[in-house]
Length: 104
Image 1 (cartoon, rainbow, N blue to C red):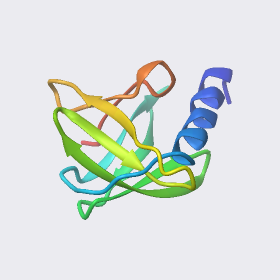
Image 2: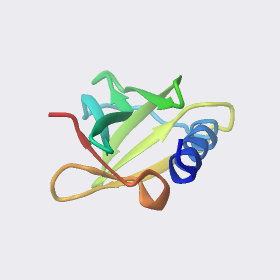
Image 3: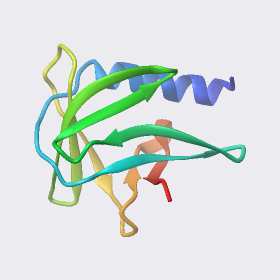
């Protein structure tokens, strides 16, 4: 495992522990290819539930799509994390997550 991938996955674990919201709008797997292998990071259930895969551990939260962003919540902290949705419908995860697009 590369340091960058480890850092991204570690950050995902930390973010999921402080997420909080509800809603719906997306459905399916979002992630990206790493060295030619698909890596799912978020799975949107379409009922307002999202699963985040961090190093094989699945964290469950809620999500809401509004104002060009997806707001994700979960964990003990009750805080909300917002991610921008780009023109192609991909999620901008910043420097740690990168761009996460829907699995084709």
